[in-house]
Image (cartoon, rainbow over all chains, first blue to last red; front, side, top):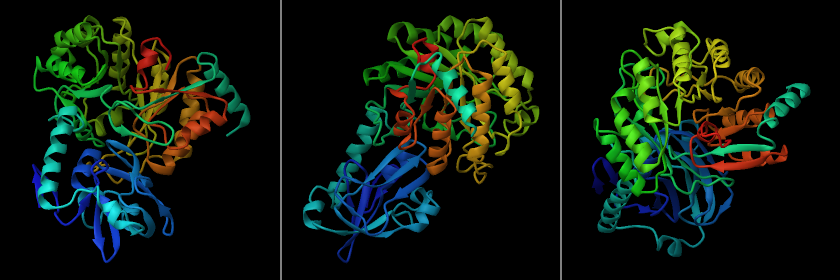
Length: 149
Length: 319
């Protein structure tokens, strides 16, 4: 498991470099959530809006939006496909994103259209994830995107 | 909403900001909607002079708001921090911080640094003051800050119970008077629903603001933070908020009236933003999705800024 300070990223997941969304492969489907780095940068999540089941979404396009202490903006799909599940629990209790990033805090499950191609530019594998996490943390601190303590 | 009320409120806005409404996305948070995308999150940032520490530990915050601000390690560190920020594209700062037991943010101790930041880096500087005493007013005037923002509370009970502060409404009025006396432009805030979600001192606060020479008024909503004693208290109903916004518009027809950062999320926020446009507000921070389109549908021209909602008015540039 990749870890820097108190942020950890499980090795088995795929990560969107820019959006800090994770993607978990589950028997041909893709469950999507916000990684721990992303939720720490966003702050406490107050509101989530998600497209309904049945909607098609393109890679990099919004499947919903999120409002948090330090983030107001879209949630952009790491893979293209049809939304086949929406997490009603996280809509009712948005702080699940903060308290259980890789568990109950997921957003949607997507039935992918072109999984192989879409996974190609996501970060995967223990070494790659660790190197990316360290670089991200360095860049965020240099740019002041994490508040200095 | 009565049509006649709308009409007169919109007319009030138009008499000094013809046909425009201002939308703001300062660097306090990442902001991206289909209508307004913040380009440089470091353009205008918030700094806490006390890190995450605050002696008051108010019921709705407990110092949590300070956690996302840049932190100054000690006196002398403010200028260094601002120099680093300037190198990364920052042009202005909101200097905030926790309060001491008497409700004051310790600006007086940082006056020399504030002045250097202003003179050498050319930053726009806004300050959150808390209660103002004469030494602070002197220090802020000497530092030539661009404006002071202060939450005005109109209920002694709220001051005691929510802020844990041994002070009275008169102390807040005196603070505004001192800012006025020292020629520091002020932009007071009123937190709607501050008394555990109920309206208690808001009307009195509005009268205090109306009685002083302020630049404008910012209305924000109680948004209790997670992990505080108020965390499960819902914000006031949109209709209640809207009534007060309309009342404020009527009471301050010749002043800029703005919706600040702290507002409910989701549909409640969108409804409040639309209502604010209907009753003639001049500016909105971090507008909800589709608020800009709604403003356009009302014949208003949107103007976008990446700084705090009060800055333009304090500088005399409009929103």
